[in-house]
Length: 121
Image 1 (cartoon, rainbow, N blue to C red):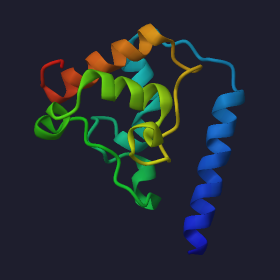
Image 2 (image 1 turned 45 degrees about the vertical axis):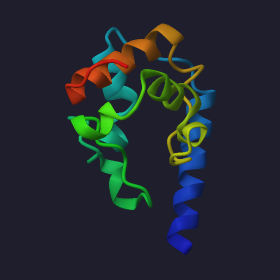
Image 3 (image 1 turned 135 degrees about the vertical axis):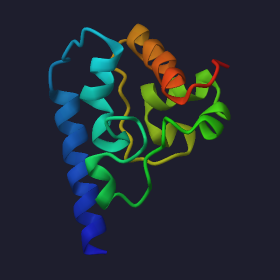
């Protein structure tokens, strides 16, 4: 219980720091993925990021074709833009609106489709 509370406080702190930090502009969608997503989703997008160890929910495996194909582009976009809680998933996934622009989020959706080798929906 104590570890869970510490974990939630840590994530709240991280999300607050992200919200107060000036936006870092990445040159490519791959750079944005490395900058914002790999901590939880892993360098290869397989859900094995360094934060996975202490998380009560396993981060989504973006390379899982079957699971990712079930998601609409709109759902993926909303999860990135508004955070996991907005799509009834983990509240540990922060909202990236204000950090990434709408075009960058759209590019991220396309990049995730590339990682999963599944078609846009």
